[in-house]
Length: 319
Ligand SMILES: *Cc1c(COP(=O)(O)O)cnc(C)c1O
Image (cartoon, rainbow, N blue to C red; front, top):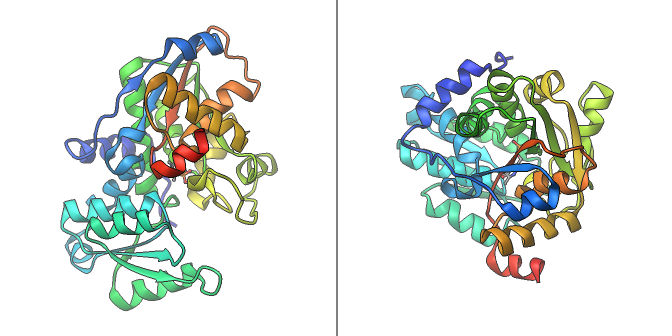
């Protein structure tokens, strides 16, 4: 076991990311404030490099490689934003990258990953075990495997988004964070407890796959089948060992949002705030509207985690 990350690791990650990651804007909307009767602060990671917060964790993890690791390269498996985050970070740092992607991953994501210069190896997700395959490749090629969420350096990097939010707007009463495997939520927890200790912190996952909520209630990691949801960034089957440890100690509760609520939020962001947020990125705002929290008069932070959705698909969804 590596040791769990602390807020010092988030601060160190912020220093490594400085000048490489965007300090994304915190946007406000009077309409949203009026709708919910509170003050909302949207941390716009849809405007991060490669379109999602995952650049933060990927770049932080790769920045810590020693000379031998840099030479041998990085290996990652992902069908989505983690693939692009590792590919871009590797290119910026001059590290060779190999990404394992399922054969049926969206063409655009595969092209984007190749476009950043990574070698893409495809596998059949119904026949091959991707974790076994990636371990085999990592061993054969001497590459370092960087997982999408369950790694202290990834978690610390993801925590820099919430760190910037608190630095920019001060303490908050509530913070809502999208939840898949828990890299973003655990990193946000470290920043929240350091910079706004009284803030209520909630993870939000798709209604179709509430393994995080079940895990928190049960006190152990619960596994579920891959959930069917529009929130493709949060289609995880379980939290990680490291992420769960940080989440169970620091997170107040885990809420859920339905696909219909996510589409409604996407439409709101497009119409009212003139921006594209991908379905997974809408989890926090959907929960603010519908999860029954008492937000009246409160200062509420919402992390919009990403904006990577095919425009044709976006059109179909919000029509
Ligand atoms: C990966 C991802 C998430 C979930 O992050 P975890 O660290 O796995 O919990 C949320 N939103 C977007 C846009 C993502 O790409």
